[in-house]
Structures are given as C-alpha cells and as structure tokens.
Image (tube, rainbow over all chains, first blue to last red; front, top):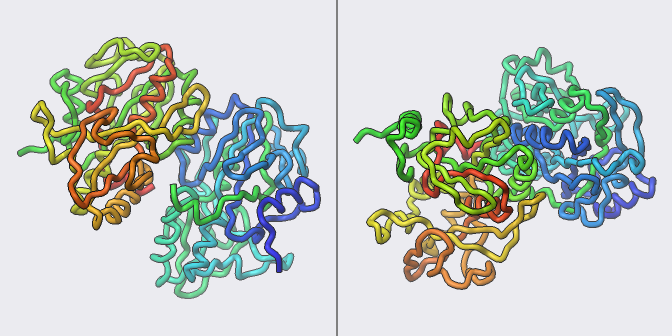
Amino acid sequence: MTIELPETIRRRCRAGTLAGPTAGLAPGYAQANLVIVGKEDAYDFLLFCQRNPKPCPLLEVTEPGDPRVDRLAFGADLRTDLPRYRVYERGELMTELMEIRTQWTEDSVAFLLGCSFTFESALLEAGVGVRHLEETGADGCSKNVPMYRTTRPCRPAGRFAGPLVVSMRPIPASLVARAVEVTSRFPAVHGSPVHVGDPSTLGIASLERPDWGDAVTIKDGEVPVFWACGVTPQAVVLESRLERCITHAPGHMFVTDVRDNDLAYC
Amino acid sequence: MTIELPETIRRRCRAGTLAGPTAGLAPGYAQANLVIVGKEDAYDFLLFCQRNPKPCPLLEVTEPGDPRVDRLAFGADLRTDLPRYRVYERGELMTELMEIRTQWTEDSVAFLLGCSFTFESALLEAGVGVRHLEETGADGCSKNVPMYRTTRPCRPAGRFAGPLVVSMRPIPASLVARAVEVTSRFPAVHGSPVHVGDPSTLGIASLERPDWGDAVTIKDGEVPVFWACGVTPQAVVLESRLERCITHAPGHMFVTDVRDNDLAYC
C-alpha cells in the first residue's frame, strides 16, 4: 500500500479528486483545522487563542489576503487544498464547497489550529488504545471522538466567548498516567487532559449523549479522560454570528508537511 | 529574614518606596517583562509573539485602557506597581519614571511576558549552577546574564521585525542534558535552549563582549548554552520606532502572584 504524502493529498484536493474525510491519510503528518475571519476580527480571534491555548492550538496565522502557509505546507493554497469547506453567515451554514477562491478576499485572515489526531498517534504508539478508532458507527466507518459542551467558560476576547468543549477517551486506570505523560508532551496541540474522571463537575449530564461525534463504549476499569477540544474555537466563532466565517468541513482537514512528532518541540 | 510576598512588593512600588531591581525578591514567584503599545499596534505585536514564542513568552494582554491583570496579580495596577518604567518615543529613551499614570491612555495595551528568572530557579533547584548569579560586577551586585544579538532573524509581524537575542549560561558538559530537561519543562517561559556550543553559527563574534548584561567566566569543561531571551521583543519594538512605547526598566520587573512552578503547566 502506497502512503500518499501530504503534498499529493493537497494536490488531489486542489484538483477536486479528493473530497472526503482526511482521518488516516498521510499518517505521521499533522492535520489542521481552518478558521477564516475578516481582518477586522483577527485581533479578537488571535487574542482568544492566546487566552485559551488548550482548546485553541494555534499553529499559523496568514497575512490578510494571502492564502499561503509555506512554513507548514510549502506551496499550499488554503483556498483549494482542503477537501471540503463550510461557509457560515451570521452563524448559519450557508454552503459546503470544495474550494473557496470566490469567497476568499483581500481581507481574509486564515488561522490554522492543530488537531487531536496528532496526540492520538502518540497515544497509539505508546500502547494506549483510542476507543473511537476501535469502534465503527452506523456507516461502517470508525466513529468520531465524542465531544461535549461543558459549563466551563473560555476566557473571552472581544466578541468571542463561549464554553470549553472537550473530547473524551476512556482509558484503563493503569494507563491514565501514561496517557497524561504522552499528551503532555504536546503543549502546542491541546496538551494534557483538562479533567480525569467524573464528568458531572464539567456540567456533562450524560457521556452517552455527546454534543458532537459518537458515543463510545466505556469498559469496566476504564476512566473517562477529557481533553480540550478544537471544536471550542469553531463553536465560539459561530456563536459570535460574524457576518461571514469559513471553516474546514468537519473531518476534512488541512494536511500539512509537519510531522506530528515535531509538534512536541517548540 | 522575612520574605515579602508579591502583593507587598507591588504596594511598595505603588507607594514609591521601592524603586530598585527586583531580582531575588519574592523567590518562587514569577516576574514579568512589560511592553505597552497603542492599540493600533497591538495586533502586530500579539502576532509577533505568536510567531516567536521562544523569545516572547506572552503571559497576558490587557484590554485597551485597562491596567489590571487580575489573573496574574489580583488588584494590581500596571501603571504603578513596577518599581521603574522607561518611556520611549520613536525608539529613543525619553525618561525613566516610577509610575506612568499620566502616560497611560485609553488606547494603551499592555503585554506581560515571562522572564528567565523563572527557569533559573528551576535550574538552581536541580543543582545546575547559574554563573552570573555566582559572580559580582563592578558595582558589587551579582552580574546580569550575558545577552547577545544573533544573526538569526525573528519571524516578522507587521512593523515588528528584528534579530533573535539570546542569553548564555555556561554549563558543565555532564549537566547540559539536565539543563535542557529542566528548562524544557517551561515551554511557556522560553523553554529549552535554542543552541548549545560554538556561538559562531549564531553570528556571535565574542562571548566576552555581550550586547547586554555582563560577560561571565566559562570554566574548563563547560559548554556555552543559549536560550531565547526576552530582550528580543523589547529590542524589536524599539527598532520599530513606534511613536511611543513604555517598558519596564531593565531589571525592574512586575512581580506576579503566580508561582514559577505553575508556569510549567499549561
């Protein structure tokens, strides 16, 4: 089996021949979430990321109007090199597109944020199983990680405010420490868990009813472990009801040339 | 000997009864550098810090016109609670003051950045000596760490651009790994060294002629180890020749209520 390099994947997105989810593609290479706002909102969003580093693992910010991010992906164009995009107006989903050349303007500022795929690779390498990758959903594909809105507010910045969203992975009690040690090596990509154990103090009523993603099995002897989740900044931006905001379509990320392991070092 | 708590130190600054350097005060509590720019330059400076995290360990950004930083220091007022400030206009030092109530405006945005005192405490606790603390200068006080301009450029952001400045600490060869391990625990405050060994590839001509601070003795069997230095953002801001910029006076820092050790966790 040939493993496609990130550059090939991005080229296929650009050509329109790849429009599906990116989970599992280019293993070992970091994938990123995309949030595009107008430059008039860039300061507030940058400050929101600075104030909430665990849920907002900011990797790169473009110059206004410039869709390149050469340091992460040489020669890439953010308007074309994701498989699928979502365009929101005042918080409402307007359309899903395979490229955003028309929507991108000279005022567009793109933010690329790291994603938990990066530390999930490290967990697997360390012998810590990741439950949602082991279970399949109704569609026969592996489940998405369960994600939950909490009652813990993020620090607001300008017009951006909202609750912390967390992802949950059940971990055997004897491996919780390992899961903490492994993920704490990635402070730039969510880092260590924000909460281990009883979800009620996070304001989560039922682990079986996630707000995003799929519920997973929690086996006897396992502990629910919660990490800050990258849905947080996306949800906050939508709640702010910006005139327009563009993001990646869920699961359809930007594949960079940066190795996951390099994100452990700053 | 009574150890003054940070709050007491800040109150003495506010009352004008403390105007001297803060090194060694409130041991175990993090001290911070201060950079104040107008809000029109805040985005570029925030982006500069995001793009250059090692030399710019950003802890907090105020709301425009609001001199409080309650999360770092409850009840503090940045206009009064440092022992000494410097006011620059177009890169030229205009005056040194003990408080900046008149200079602070509704457009002022203050940035607080971490400082190497934080990881120096950790080095000492780990049994790694810090040479400039062991030697005294001509004034009979312990030396300042030697700092050097390098030929390595920072990533620019808007009007802010300039070279990386590094600090140097000579470390015995057998303790270099320990120095790396200890300081890598503080990614939020400079983190691990940027360079170990021969300074010539950093563009440093002579270790005996630092650009800031004092030269220190390098003993046989010791290796020069270089960390990104907080003078970097200050030097860059001055080079940008902003109409006005206010900083702490060198060595006269803002003493926070945050414990150094808490900065190891994000």
